[in-house]
Image 1 (cartoon, rainbow, N blue to C red):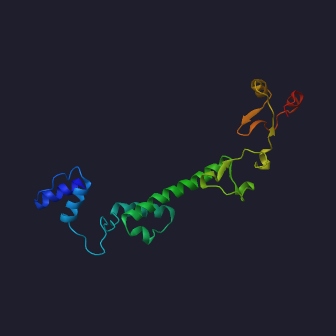
Image 2 (tube, helix red, strand yellow; image 1 turned 90 degrees about the horizontal axis):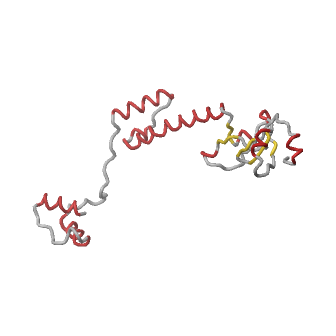
Image 3 (cartoon, rainbow, N blue to C red; image 1 turned 60 degrees about the vertical axis):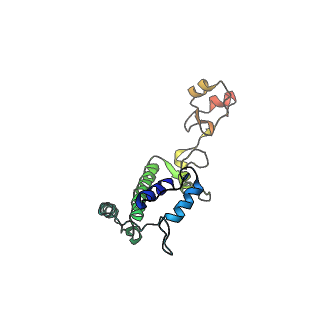
Length: 184
């Protein structure tokens, strides 16, 4: 408000009231008397939408052509709308690429492992299979173990592994040594 009042003082060549720099009420009163009035229906600070720049349009066409898309008319309406459309498209492309990478790396969506009834967010929709019941049959099953504290080195030598669900024996590990110790 103070800067606007200072600019009015310079433009109109009028003397500001004393204390306008330290008092909001004095500054507001000064501005209401001397600031230009808005026409009926005109909103203060509301600007016309900025048109799409040639560079934006060229970049959007490049994205659309590469993906076989058509740029929507809503995106062509303003620079802000075009920016939003441009920003959205690379994210969607990256999301699809990550999905393919996850499938190749052994990650599964909840739907592909029988968990379609779970409601999960987009960031949780892909997860590495960890629990025995969620793992596909081709990966075998893990055998949960009860390894007492302080027996980590022995358990590791016998082939035990530790994961987010605790100690387990991976498929193919001989379970007899764990059974003798009462760790099954």
